[in-house]
Length: 221
Length: 221
DNA sequence: TCTACATTTCTTGTATACAAGAGGGTTGAC
DNA sequence: GTCAACCCTCTTGTATACAAGAAATGTAGA
Image 1 (cartoon, protein in one colour):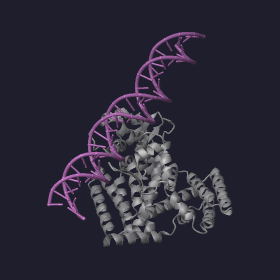
Image 2 (cartoon, chains in turn cyan, yellow, orange, blue; image 1 turned 180 degrees about the horizontal axis):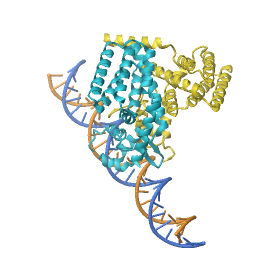
Image 3 (tube, rainbow over the protein chains, first blue to last red; image 1 turned 90 degrees about the horizontal axis):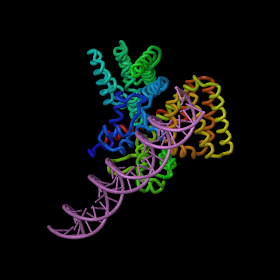
Image 4 (tube, chains in turn cyan, purple, orange, green; image 1 turned 60 degrees about the horizontal axis):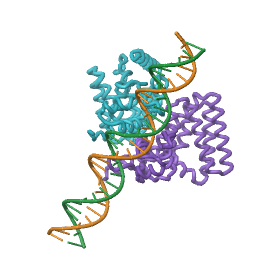
């Protein structure tokens, strides 16, 4: 067949899930996917196996694959872990950052500020991701970086909802500034605390997130 | 075929890797694995895809699968992350543990003590794992629990090496006791500190040193 | 009309056949 | 003797055929 769909098929299906085209709980029929992507069932199955291995898809024996539905509590748990991973990366970045890391972080921050001043939510969403990636890189722990990126990716849909909240963008930006101050000052503890509370969905934010999820559920039903 | 090899094949191959039967860098020939496990290539390939998704196996297009070889720095990075995840679980356990968690932790600790007093390294190795699992459960964060278990599993071979060190077992046991004290006292900070240093072979300083050294190497090259 | 059972159909799981690329070895030329 | 080109083989990637289990539907009996 078209080949060159080597391991790209996995990414295609993954994107369909992460962009919300496939909803949580949706059944992933092998032949449907096969016809859709113009391949046979074999590569589809291999892609689904990979996605099940990273927890995006659930495969029940003889009962097919479905898009995993984390549920509010599980999403909260993931954010809790994400907060700690980010905090860890920030602490390491504070202790280990080099000149090029500093440059990259400041650049990313500037772009965030730009997007916020333009009130461009979509662009801020993108630059926000780049900002956090810059911190991962500055941690100089490649494994941590991979873990952060993977989890960040999985939480992407919910993070996008979060940003829709009123004033979230300007609050987020000022938090970013505090985080950068701490990292560049080499203050690992401050970076930890600030990143943790930046990510953590506590109080209002968690309520907002849950409320939005409920709304989504209602819309889906 | 024998069926019931549903997704067990993945675990079998994974075990072969984690127990060291398949060495890092080894080529994983599909037909060899197929004949060995009495199945066709299809389920073998599916298992390999899953293992590649979780980073245990590397698949290069048209060039086959090999057991991934992390290398010393990567292993160190993984331990660094593991330490933080364990510390996080311990802190949550300190804040959230219920009565049944306390029972489970104390039981696991008792079994560790028993194994240590019998000087039974293999049994201590096993009970040590159970002890840490009890802490994961007590964190009451299912996602964190899964992440910890997965990483713990991946680090198993290296941890085994660690335990062979002289006196490691008794040192480990007394550390366990301090950790349990902190958790049951609800002292999240103490639990964090103690678990972090329990996992990390050396303190953060060493990690920072390594990271900086690597940076120097790269600049020189 | 409802329920229990059988059949039928549909989907998954596995095996095998086929295609295509990568690597190695041989042969030939210089 | 060395190097390069070509062919052969071996392995991977994909498609399809086949087997087996699960869900759905239809039928018969109460």
